[in-house]
Image (cartoon, rainbow, N blue to C red; front, top):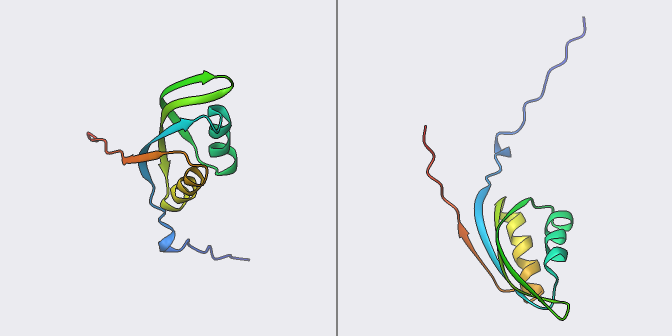
Length: 101
C-alpha cells in the first residue's frame, strides 16, 4: 500500500488584509473608467465604488471618487505609487466596522 504524506502549509502564510477607503481626485489627465480598469486588471485589486462625483468637460474627467478596498499592504503600496506617479491626489482611511456576534 502506498501512502503519501501531505505537507502542511507554512504557518507564516497568514496574509493580513486591511479594509480601506481610498479617495482619489481626478485632474483631467486620466479618464475615470480607464483608471478603474488599471486598478482591476493591471494592479489586480478588487474594489467597490462607494461614491463618485465625476464631471466630463471637453473629454477630460474632473471630480473625485471613493473606493472600498480589501487589500494587503504591498498591493496598496503599488496602487499608491501608481496614483502618485500619475499626479492623482489620493487619501486613504482605514475602515473599521463593528462586528456583532
